[in-house]
Image 1 (cartoon, rainbow, N blue to C red):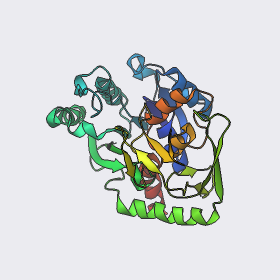
Image 2: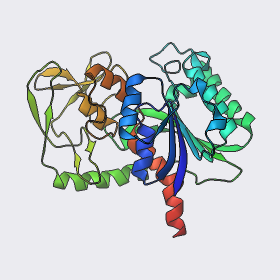
Image 3: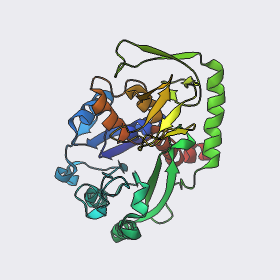
Image 4: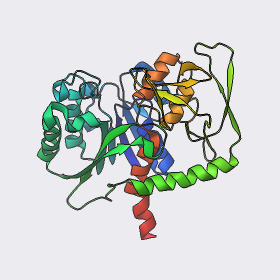
Length: 325
């Protein structure tokens, strides 16, 4: 199966990577992003993708048939950590531009992701506007769920995933997902623990030329290309909240553009390394390298969690094919 794909607010390619890992082939890939660093990373990993620039300048008549559109529109106006301007804010209001493109291109499926604040912004009125906007197109059956990255990775990251299927009764339904997905990944973890040894993490931000040697465990996960070898840090960690109170636990706090999370280790506090941030989001090591740590933190924190995307795409495209076979 091959699809023509449009990746809006593409960031560093979390959606595209999840699609790729799910085994769905992309014939033509278009992407729209205004951050210059994210654009460079996207083009590095997806060199055949066609760059469209700012979403506000896209001309749908130039793209031809599009099968799938994904987007994680800017969340700053919806986030609890922000000023909660809602869909009336300049950034989160770009949702309407994305929906206009969908109304013009009519992809078979569209998927968007955003913070759980979307459900409560302006006392729930913003989510009502989302539903009304989609209903006005008049052609899509929709489903959505609040999903937590902690089901598959040790990061407490709640996000709303919303899927629109073109046509009445069309499309493989994805939601609900939950315990069965978690059990699947727990089996993978048990296998990986048997084949993992040690992980050496070179951490230079604040501790120049020092190398940490960490045992393998379920506290931080890194997935490697084409293998079931999954690495963990076994050493007990204290994850730090935004107010810097130490909290014992197995999950990191939600990564964001400021990388406010960190760990207490060996009687000192340090931030997550960019590599650890990549792992907590399901990206391969070095996905965002060649840039400063601060730039990498921002891009990683703004990304979608790759394994969540992979699961959704598998249920959309791969599971129906397997059932037919």
